[in-house]
Amino acid sequence: MSVNIVMLLKGESAGLCCTSGKISLPSLSPPPEPLKTLLAGNTSQSKLFLRKIRKFNSCFQMTSFGATKIVHNKDGCNFESTFKIQGQIGSLLPMPDADPKFLQIYFIGDEENQANTRCAYNRIEQIEEREIVEILETFLQSNNQLVRLFKSLSNRLQNGNCVINIKADKVPNREHAGTYNVPTVNEVAVVIAGDPTEHRDIRIQRRDNTVQTIQDNHRSYDALQYPLIFWEGEDGYHLNIKQRNPTTGEVLTKKVSAMNFYAYRLMIRAIGNVDGTNNINNIGTTYILSSSYTGSPRHMQEYIQDAMTYVRTYGRPDLFITFTCNRNWDEIKNLLLPDQSSMHRHDIIARVFKQKLKSLINLVTHHSVFGETRCWLYSVEWQKRGLPHAHILIWLVDKVRPEEIDHIISAEIPDPNVDQELFDIVTTNMIHGPCGTLNIMSLCVDNGKCTKRFPKPCTADTITNIDGYPSYRRRDVDNGGQSYE
Image (tube, rainbow, N blue to C red; front, side, top):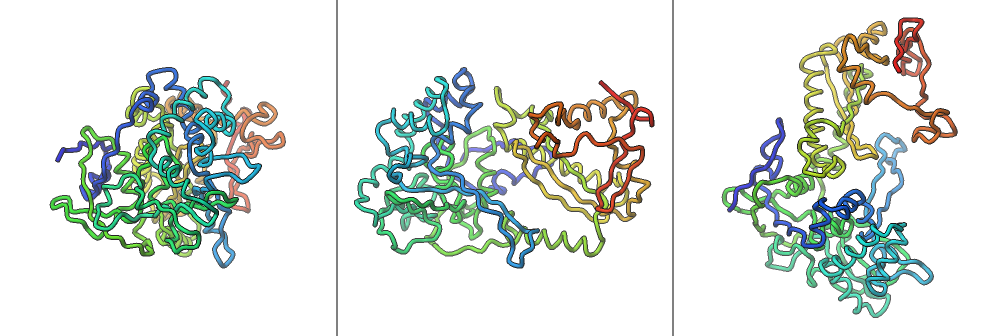
């Protein structure tokens, strides 16, 4: 058994990578050529591939992204509304007079026709990008076992009554889960439409105009959605992965969570992973996720109840703080590999942001920089550009009075003669615009006006409005304010 040296940040628990040795997953195979060279970032072609890797993944993904509508809870309130994105999969062949897309492209003509269709569907016109598509086309046709299985089984679909069925999380009887990194013929079968199957199984018809939503805990979800990462078509996370005793290797009853599964995969280790297999029974039952499962409905419901309890007991929060991740933090840049940017390492961004957030919460709550804290809570969201930010609510023992607002919050540019570092931070990261008539192409402009209502009007004093949103003090030059070019 080899020893893994995992790189952890200050403040991260020792069990973050593998739950203190209770998780052991099969090692992922290193990518062969030409994917290895494309991922290295040493050539102009490789750098183009990494810069537009999401676009190239979209060319070859076998499922589409399907976004559900906003779902409200039963009593009509909207505080618990959701917007969830899931994978969707259609049939092997398109309907007549319809263009092939996603998985269907793998079944039209030769590799040249498939490459042409992918480039047309994804609007790829540059010769350099097309060359990469052709390279990946040949690579996946030869190495992705899911594609090869689909092609071998598609010939058995003689009519519309048969479908290809991929079992959700089952393995052949008396076998080990870790042995089957790629679905086998025993796990991917042709069945008659209407035969009883698990509700989480994937059913693919030969030709149909409907799509099926894939559960995000189906073992083939990752391989179908991200073929350039799971280039062999190997299994991803599913609900039948169990933990094991780190000393004896005995299989435990507790299952591996999705968070722990992906944390294990994302961790950088100085030495290769420890191989191991877990004995697992074919359970095939419905699972109810408890509140201890992070992100489960019961877990989120508990947080909602806690938040409402604070409001009922202590009233409105005193401070609403937004803490945003900065991809130029030294802690992020120092951990990037050569030729990498922050967009390539969301795992580092998330870990560094969490430690920074913990430090901020500790500063506010334990060191009482705004006064003694009664209670607090926060929620982390991800921006469209791939960076997280946190919304923090603080309840203070002594309520903030209107005349104290300017001592806590400033909407003015600080004086560089007093604090040069703060001046540099604010002018670099917190200046909005130009927008409006000065820049109608800005993302915040709608109908010629800034949707964020900039520029804000100058005011000599902070004014608290009836709706609870104050107009912060922004003094002009005549009233003691300062202007900078």
